[in-house]
Length: 341
Image 1 (cartoon, rainbow, N blue to C red):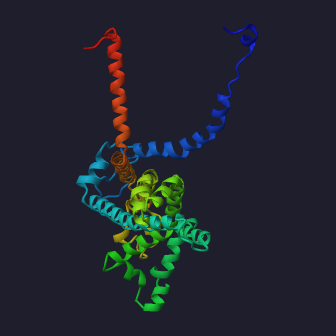
Image 2: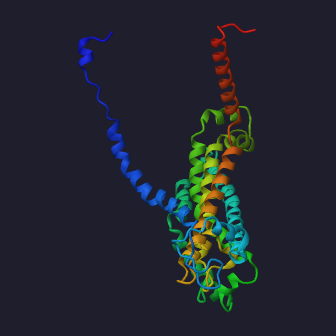
């Protein structure tokens, strides 16, 4: 029983100050993230400012058109349907083509740099050099490679004397521009991925590696039996962030253009959406752009959920299931008076 002195002590709660400190983040997040997202959903159900001859002509942004924009993009409007699915195909091809080599190279370098048996001088220097491309903005990188390969007076044009290297990049073989974008993405991001994987490897208990070495396991066995399984969490994080960034890829394909717009073989979904937003007064398709953004949002959400489902911890799920069953059984026995047959 509390004494009178203890009852007189007033409890002091500092919880409200914590809410005050985190309030600016939520305000900014709502203004710049939540509100634009909700507004995009609303915009996707409204009309377009399109000129004569279009499917949605004479519609204004105040007209509520329901699911028309989605139907036109996915099924009815041949032009926009074709362009959207072509851009979606380009996005998936470019992302897959840069993510698989990127994660393989980053994982190899991360294991190499964290292996104590590898005595290589200057490891810190090489880590910094490999991470440096990630610091440069994507627009600057795209401009750099455009000067190397894309322009009429580019380095490529000077060395190999094509009539127009931008046309050479955008015409003929569709894989020329795709392979260049894949290389740029790998060059930019493998250092960042390597650092994240290194942090995951360094978080593994060293006693596991020591025990494997004592038992006579070689480097390959140690990697596949210890390192790789315990990197599951950081690998899932890397896959999700890369997938989200890859599906939203815009600046490099857009700036690496042929002078007449984005090269068709590297036009991504984000480029398709941007073109619908930034067209002239008779070409703007705000409703289409909003619908395409929402479709991309749901594609990303479904793929993210699929990744989580495939990589779920089945042992933990089974343990939780058995625990819930045990609790239900205990409650049933308690209601039955503690006796069971």
